[in-house]
Amino acid sequence: MLTCAATVGDELVIPINHFSGNYTCDAATLERLRAEDRIVLRYADDENPNGSVDAIAGIANEAGNVVGLMPHPERASSTLLGSEDGLVLLRSLVSSAAVSAAA
Image (tube, rainbow, N blue to C red; front, side):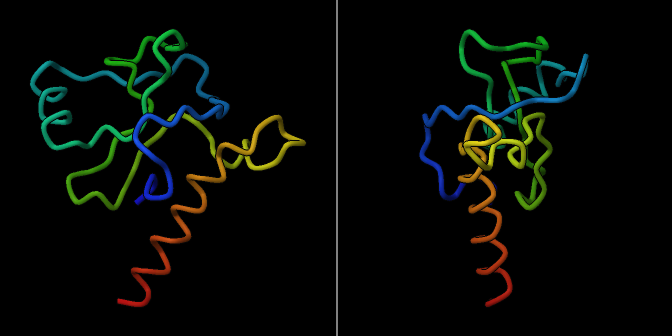
C-alpha cells in the first residue's frame, strides 16, 4: 500500500502539479470513501490549494491496489528538491511490491 511506511497523522511536504485539477464527488461517494477508509491522503487543514472535496489529495480503488493522487512524491525525494517527505510513499510502494512478489 502507498502509505504502509507512514503513520496516520503524518504531515508530508510534497509538491503538487495539477494546475486547476481537483477531486470532486457526490455526497454518497464521499461517504462510501470514508466508510471504506479509501482516502489515503488529504491536504493539510489550511492547505487545500485546489478546492478538492474534503481536502482529498489521494484515494484508493476498492481493491486497495491502485491509488490516484495529486501530490508527486518523486518530486520530494531529495533535500536538493526541497523535501525528502516523498520517500516514505516511495518506500511504501517498494515494500508492498516486494511483499506481493514474495507471495
